[in-house]
Length: 270
Image 1 (cartoon, one colour):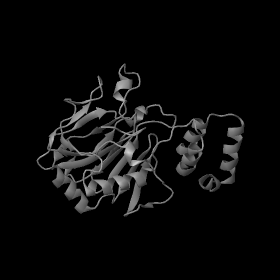
Image 2 (image 1 turned 90 degrees about the vertical axis):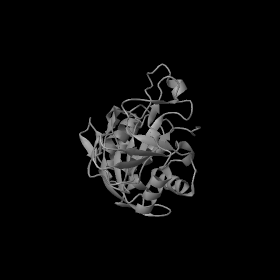
Image 3 (image 1 turned 180 degrees about the horizontal axis):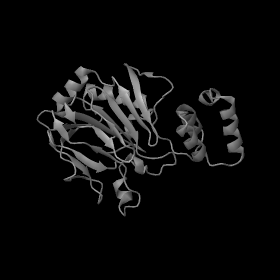
């Protein structure tokens, strides 16, 4: 219980007292998270079998040492949990991902609410191409980096997508999670469960526009080459997070390249 023991004694006492009173662990975890005690919240969560295991970032330091590089944690927000990670990709890696998409880009699609397949939708006007996990040495390296950053097994991630936004292209406000109230929810999540988290990696700078906007919390993250943006799509108890509504704002000037990685609850089968 290292993270919890690092809290002030009054907070350690508060945790013990609330556990002894029978307060639901999710309520305790939420309070810790709201106060910025992220690592203590995740530590407590990991000890409780009834609390869903979700991806998380170690926010105890401003820099995070990953197996092959050190990245910088520049911003966090809660709720929902949002983190901006600088230097996640090198300029060379960004350029290589863009080059790997050349000649392969097609109209971007969304997951169909009918059967979970991919389908065209007029709310999404970018072009994109998808890669299977481990498709190239570079993608394998990036997937290992994501696994270390988010403490989430590589096998629980969908294949990486590279997206291209020309002037005016956008992705209107949407959720990445699958609505559990939808009558076909079971079919949609049959390939790996719920989408619990999303990692976006900006592959290019954009002169104007092209930010990722969270309209319900008045937050917008502007593109910066090599920077990653992570956000949770679900809460600690596994329920969906309505505050995760987000949009890819229209590109006003320039071109935007982006790579996306969606994380699932279980092993994902394409």
